[in-house]
Image (cartoon, rainbow over all chains, first blue to last red):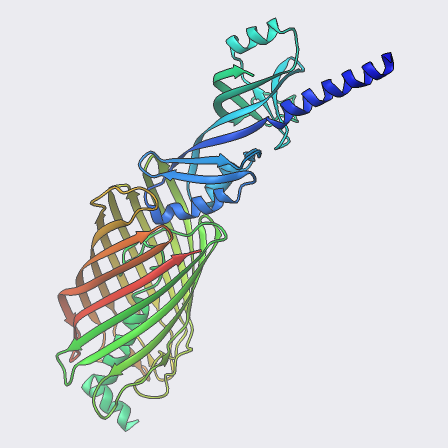
Length: 173
Length: 289
């Protein structure tokens, strides 16, 4: 009987972990694009960004110089090549902001956001409020929903985490 | 040979060739909507993208003998090798060329040209793009040049150009210089051609993406052609200078564009006895895929 309870408990924990992973994703990306002057030119940008894995809808605002990518249902937007794609369209991406949901882990002294659908991981840049909150949780893995900007990592000893996320807003799920 | 000398004396043959060559050379790289219609800009197309343009052009020349009318239909396809490098194939079809009754009119494929444009400098700012590009092209003698009126020059010619522009949400500024180096054809070596253009455009309404987008543009086009040669002799009725004022419009909707413009001569100084241009106009449809 104890064995059955042990297995059921294990399955419950595994299911809970899978549930939180399934919700981890980049839901929206907002790219500040420089050089965007006309709608005819913007077509190339739309076409490039629509091909990005996980992207469902692309909205371009010429007057704001902004391209907004919204994810397909239950998919995460692949963000690794966004700057290169904007360049291939003939423009320059200056700022990439994301709305993301994922599991926060502490690895090698850094908080990392694991985005399972894209197999990407983001180092969370120093955020005192988030750090203190996560410290109180005593290292437990937590799912958060956050908004912030992406940048190439500044830390060289974490090869598996190519991007850093500067969080401007978050909530713990 | 006597017939040829007769043509040279009257300026007819040269005028015919000049008209045709000007039409061919006036569109070195017009593909891309927000570029001058008769001039040239530094814009390319996105990497892996195709631009397809069909263009209708017409010119009327008068002043010596009967008027000449040339109508051409041009198909161009551009491919973006990278975001800053594009190659273009241009296939002109000349038709409805009417001259004297004795010469009638002819139609057919003109001289096919191949060009590459490299945008070597680009500075992107919010809502503004400054850019400069170099263009190199070759025109092949694919058009029939042995019958009259001829559809091609019979020579392999080369194009070198430099273009720069500032494109912003409201204003456009363009400038370019072009030089066409002509080699010897069947019997005639046509004079080299130098062109310089300046253009200014404005977008009256700052519409958003996926809405119709109108840009109004005015160009100043200068053409200077050297005298041509035949059998080592300079042809008196050849070469000259022209200056045009060219208003035009661009109307785009997402990846489709319609553009058109008219070239109105402000000043012409043609050597010897040659026809002068009354007007030229062009109308084009373009799509990017």
